[in-house]
Length: 338
Image 1 (cartoon, rainbow, N blue to C red):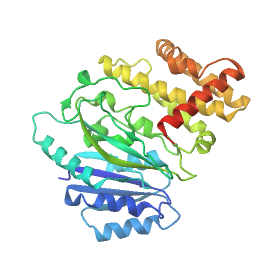
Image 2 (image 1 turned 180 degrees about the vertical axis):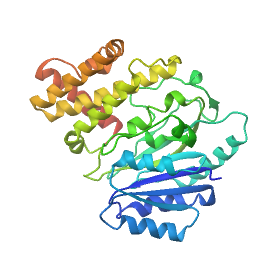
Image 3 (image 1 turned 60 degrees about the vertical axis):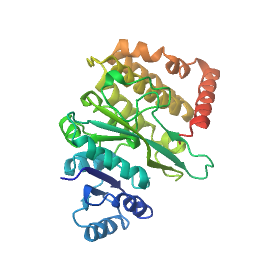
Image 4 (image 1 turned 60 degrees about the horizontal axis):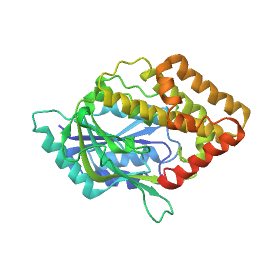
């Protein structure tokens, strides 16, 4: 039985996917690496096949019609045979020393009395040209080196959230919870770290810098210009998350508060991108998004709309919008998230 399944979604990734896959190969026979070629038109497919040929029993190449990043992850989940599951984007990579610690800890926890549902590790923003690289850690929010439940989770500060880069799920949890990411939709990694959470009962935080998140290509989905151009997809993801949480009876207070806070961040990002688009149609879409939340769950709307971030992105008039954008730029400078 494989300890850890990696899925590497690839679409026209010939120029950088080898760096990613090579960083995963040092896991040896403890891991499987599922390269999902999502209908690429370059040499991605042949590169994937070559890896499968050279590393039988470790690398699998899966070829499919183009369905987008989320659909490639769905395919990876369906194919995964390892006990745990990790998605690594084809332009990212993992740190070798941290990788060995992750595998060692997963093996150790398999022999315990309680099953682990989710491991959390740190990730590094490998921002092109940046002198100092931002590290996302979870200290204070999560006690390190301890198998815990949601009851022992601390407070996540603003900007400190579980992202796809930081989580490793138990594979069968993903299969059992019915996660189905939408096709041809960017930003659905937010759904990936949102919908499974009520099924997560146990968490282990390993305080290592495992995932290296590359930022710097002009065509990346997190590039601000690209985000504005794809804001309708951001809104779609936002509404899927609203639909999931609205009216949902999540009994654990800490889990519910965390999910509300994450949705608040999503509403903020969508609102800022719509403000940055700077046209009447975008501002109407912003109003419609907040109206959608209110119609789905008024209590949830009140909590988010009149929280700190909700107020900040709904300041009245053009001057208010300028203040909202100024606040966003300050956060962008401080965190360096795209």
